[in-house]
Image 1 (cartoon, rainbow over the protein chains, first blue to last red):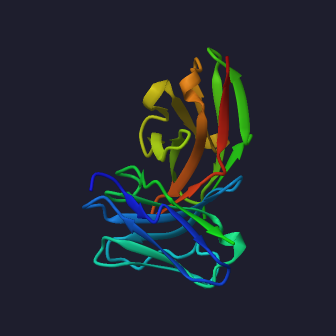
Image 2: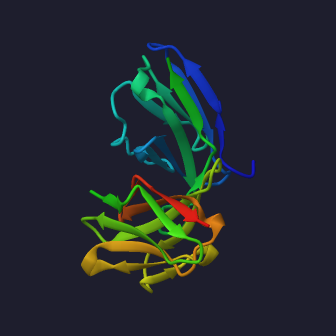
Length: 115
Length: 113
């Protein structure tokens, strides 16, 4: 596609359920980032994938959060046993290479509401 | 490790007045610095970036920013505000050799008629 695609755009779930959020980056982009955006907190870094290198998971807030990127393309962010504080907009971004050579292209985000 | 501090979660300026949005960074290695903008109900887009070379960087829509190493700052300016500049602005930093990009908490810019 022409841009970064995220699904679902909206997800309402009950506390304790697992959710999966999908990101389809721009074709050919080697770098993929996940961020969490909540009111007053800006963009919180979660995880970064670059090519075939091991991902930088240093931003994942707890072991309930995990992400994978299959075949260097599509990525899935999984949140297990969701809590109300997980409610936020989850943003995915991709770039052609590292930040010195390109800009981040963001998707529209997946809004997660945990009841 | 890198971090970003944006002073002022909300800034209001009159139409035609100078826009100044402040950003200070912390980085243990030479930084790459960015400003992104998020217009209402839209995704984030790059305004400008500093990687190497000239410290005064020009971006889209008349915005510019100056990298000042001595002040660890990368403030965003525009000489004359327009109503269409109303948006949320995010400063971001990445360290050379560490491609993780860290964003600040954002500054919402309000333009007064």
